[in-house]
Image (cartoon, rainbow, N blue to C red; front, side):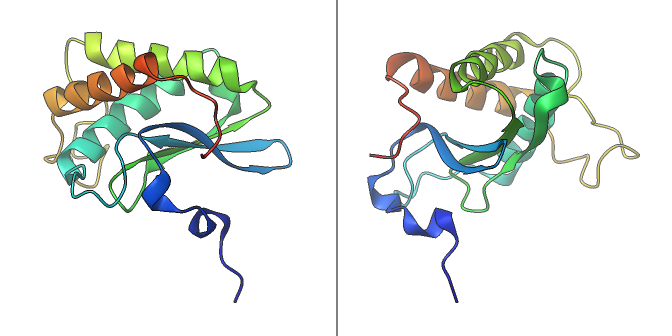
Length: 150
């Protein structure tokens, strides 16, 4: 059986950052790697779930909302995937940074925190989302983003 593309990348060489994982016609999959894989530093479910609710809501209400296909966590707990149609990578990077800043600055309830809105509504925490957003934003600001795996 043929390996899927993400299994052909040596995860021991991936650092926290933003990468283009694959391109399928007009859809680009971004690997939003919040931490280095296989180092024992993984996001807990509360953090992943909380950031997913906040980021997905803000990015789907951004200027690229019509081109956002999907946003969700990686099963390995080291980042998220963002699938976007017909947008330049530099614009997506700017939107990601802006979205993270909005999460950091968010006051009020976490989006989708009611029983009828979420299948695990008790497993959400705004502070956890904000801490993770701040952590990842600092990575994107302090490192050059080339969008390529090294």
